[in-house]
Image (cartoon, rainbow, N blue to C red; front, side):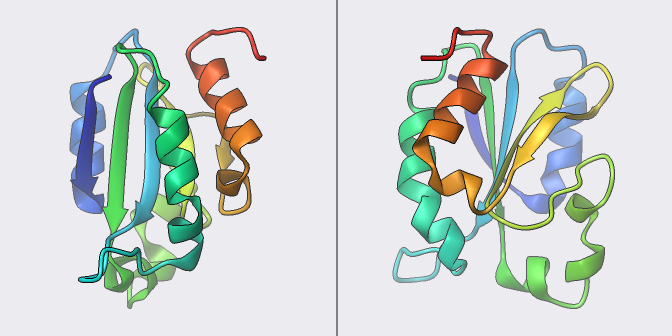
Amino acid sequence: MPRITLEGHQLPIKLLTLKGATEPIVVWLTATKKPDGTRWCPDCEASDALVEEVLQTSKASTHIIQVELSREEWRGDKGPDHFLRKEPYGASGIPSIFSWDSVTQKVKGNILGEAECQQIELLTSFLQQQEGLPEQ
């Protein structure tokens, strides 16, 4: 699977480079890690292993873009006005996972938020839907 990790401000440019891609694009918004290796966001830390487990099962052709956001970036002065909280992204919090439509350059379908990212069944179903696999 083509998987990359970016800082928040790098996401729009990367998505433009994938414009028109026929392979699924999955974007995972999460927190950066602290010096001790844990994520500063408790919900991100709680969902980390589950999200990793599910994404490891993705097809080789699926683009996985992990976007790590610092506490200052997500919660600081621009927090409520952060571009990822607005259209065309619309994330209400982190962690969040969504599918990106490379043609319309918008989120495709629903965004999985904090609670959904801690439920392996929902994560698995989401990935299977993006990859056109039958749900189990």
